[in-house]
Image (tube, rainbow, N blue to C red):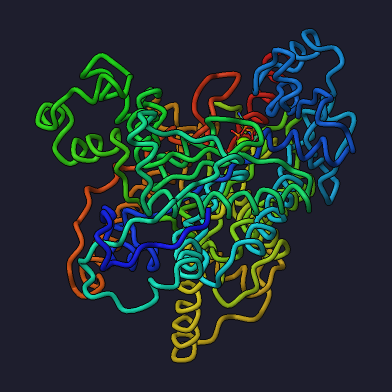
Length: 605
Ligand code: DCP
Ligand code: MG
């Protein structure tokens, strides 16, 4: 696409967009109707990682196995009739030539994760590790950052293999380069832009969703040009990733996150899809509204129950007031807009993860601290890897050890303590703190033989907040007595002593109250609390955005305040467990499947 614009003094028809819209684009404001957002999602991610690592052709069917399940299937396997998530035996039966590669595992007594041929036979002493895929994900992120122009990059990692990028800033820069007349001060921000002249857009690298009427096709405006530049950027990112890492990915490009996300999955694999503004409504009408982010769980179920449909097309006929009478006015306002493709959530690099858990259920119970220590090391190393994966921006405030002695339905005993703020957080520190907590638990009640053991780090805060807290801790310590430096009764140094004195204990007796959660439910319990936290955070971020923009909008014109996005709900963005069909958050999938494996072993043994 290359075309000059007409002068604004010409009697040319005007654009729908104003200089203000253009300026807001440059500010990556959610209020710019010219906004360009992409979601980039790797194709069959773990399967590609393995295929490339093993030097296999993408045409060779390959599945990534975790004990009895295949959790990622490449597209050659899918072409052979296999689903993305399937039972490993069934995969072999249906496609005998398939390569099934087991995920790497940690093994009791070993100090690192590895690929092992005998993981399936060692479900009792192995624990799956995601580290290799996290590493690949990090490499891909580095390529993305190198390729994306501009120093103010707005990137949100939404999962191990999917990333939102707000391309508005880079697109604005490129627009000014290509149409330098926009650099000059406009007569007024409310003046309409001139329409682009001869705007022939070549979309050949991209699948286009649009209103297919001729009028809409011909009516190209600056939103299309912005999206087109966005597509060029996404193409260059995808090419760079493929060139440097050999991974293919798909992408959606649209004016907001909701539409970009749906578009990314619309033409998989290895294809990008743009949804022109004129194409948003027809595009969304192909989908069930339960596929829309925010409507995937409780709210979506509530709406489909109230209106006895899951189709966007049906819901479009429902007046806003009727929606409000069934689901409340605030949710109704958001739902009414989102099914029409109107959505304003920000691309934010803030992570909402609240805690990280590493757990193991033992078939042969652990007998003493020396056996448990080997697992505490594995948990500590696993947790540190996952914290690093958050970019080192989040630091937990507390660590907790949980255990069960009398079987999986028995009470869970837990002990929690602070992670000293001044201390360097590494595997050794986590091991030391968790060992100390386990010893304290041992002193206080029956601990051996031990059936389940887990370590969680909790209350993750942004590192800057943590650093402020470090300062205040040191200040307080200076005024009062210094931290004890002697070793405590367990032989650990002052850090562990702090834990001893501030320990918080919880004992959950699930027999007394069947509604309480056991450690077996912990994956779900954690999911609940994380999502609760996430909801608040999402609200906070949204409020901030709306407020900030109302205050700081250019020339104080005031921007519309948008309806709050609904709470991010349980099950939202989660994977359905192939065994129990319950939604499991991506970060807990491995723990959860390991847990099933352990239960199965215990039931059969
Ligand atoms: N994953 C998992 N357990 C599941 C589903 C997925 O561990 N039940 C992992 C394996 C996937 C990765 O998460 O490779 C990314 O999930 P996606 O949903 O993006 O699936 P894929 O990337 O495998 O396939 P697609 O090409 O459809 O994106
Ligand atoms: Mg994927």
